[in-house]
Image (cartoon, rainbow, N blue to C red; front, side, top):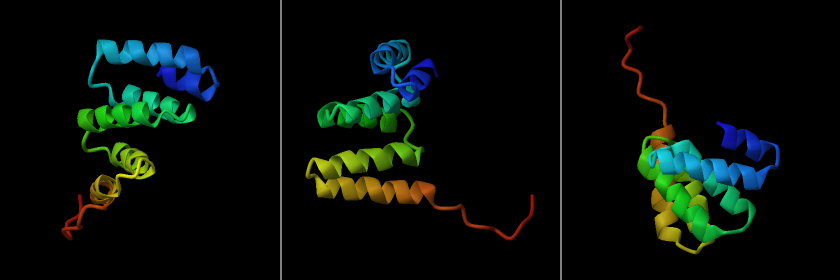
Length: 104
């Protein structure tokens, strides 16, 4: 959480340090991986952003956001096929659940 707050305040160096600490403590912290990916995008480091968003998506494959960001980075790197697969997956994850006609 602290890393995200630092990102919002423009304290990128402090954010990167705190987020790296977070993923060292919990390799499956998808939010920290996503924030590191966002920081990498800010510095135009597509390779690092790609690695971070892949880690975020692997840690929380049910979150469409990571697949959407991964798709954008893949598209920017010229991998249209992989970007398309991630976009499709993100759309599937974002789709509303079918209504079965029963009320809760």
